[in-house]
Image 1 (cartoon, rainbow, N blue to C red):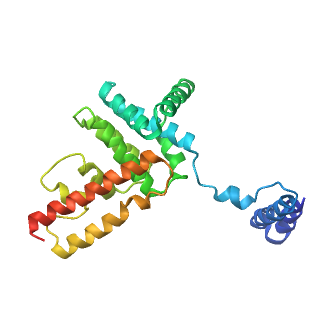
Image 2 (cartoon, one colour):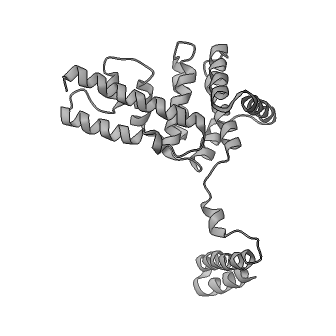
Image 3 (tube, helix red, strand yellow):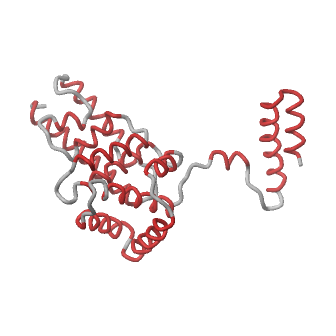
Length: 245
């Protein structure tokens, strides 16, 4: 009752904005009252709740995997096996099979939309976790030994939905597509930079991609973060050797 009284009072004082503010404040006191009898949740907890459940995360991750696997118009058994091995090694055979069964049921009921999935995860995951998801998707695309343009384009599209910056996307892509200045791309610098700038870039990237930055309980993402961190270290070692640092 308090929330409605507060909303009406707020409307008379500040019109529509006051009604909203009054409703929120009133809800807070209503929940305080109900929590005293052992129930109720604060409206502020509902508003700020950002976590995604492990089950939802796994289904959405598997959905993105299927989108990348089908990106070039054919389904590669090697890529499918890569995903299955990854899930089995991370979750164990029984849980992995349960995840795949649930995924198959979900797919039958609705069309998979990369944009919808990414929008859902954007609200519930840290930026560092989304970077790791892109790293994982590149690993799938490369599992059959070839990264095809259609696959790269699809992952680039997903990166856009994830609101990942172009330079971060290029850095992750460089971990899979070899070129003369690959190490520099991974560290997000030009080959012409000074030695001091190389060291500074390494410190920045090591901090950005450190596994501790990926604040998640999902073991698949944690493992991938460690792999990406190693790629950053390897890139720095290549430049050090090249420059005699």
